[in-house]
Amino acid sequence: MGIKLSCFYGKMLSTSVAVGRLSKPDYIAVRVLCLTEMTSLTDQLDNGPVPADSEKVFFFLEKHGLSSTTRDHPPMFTVTDSQALRPSGVSGGYTKNFFLRNKKKTMWLVTCDENQSVDLRHLGTALGAGRLSFASPERLMRFLGITTGAVSPLALINDVTHKVHFAIDRSLLRHDQLHVHPLVNTLTTTLPTIGLVQFAIKTGHPPDYLTFNHDGSVTIDTSSNKMPDGRLKAT
Image (cartoon, rainbow, N blue to C red; front, side):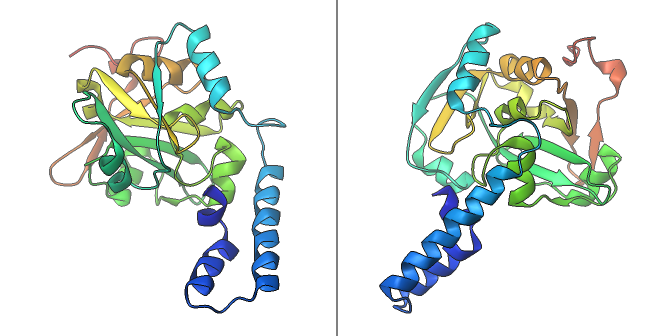
């Protein structure tokens, strides 16, 4: 599923098959192009020879005493998918995640409440980033080792050179636990909210805390509001 959605040729394949345009040889040729594109993405990883997978995430969580549970489900690509497939009666917050860059190629992973509207202009101002835009699938694979649809704070495990800045919606801290993908969009991992913050800190990504205001503006908590380890002081 990741190849199909992130590959240009895969999109062409889906459209063409639907209207009967591709012969079987052409179908095979396009499949090869998709696999070639995916291989090229993998070859571009900056932060190590092989990106961590879900099992390495689980091992990291256990090693650092961060409790979690994980369930499997059909692939999720959007918040709508998540809402349709999630179990009922489970507490906690659900997120949407943005992998962003500015003109200087500085990168941010921003994690927000799933219902939060985000104005990239205001967000860029708050982060001191200037104009922000969405980073490409190639850059996503290169620095976080994941494909579109699996973006999550747990992918910070792959940014071992700390080239990606992390910011989290402060409103998420009101939840006892959060639900995020462990590098693939066919699994959802649930862990205490403070556990997710500690995960980010232990991977070398102490978060900035964002407040999204009613007028669309965004404010960021200063370092004076943080403990030495990066956690936000209680208010």
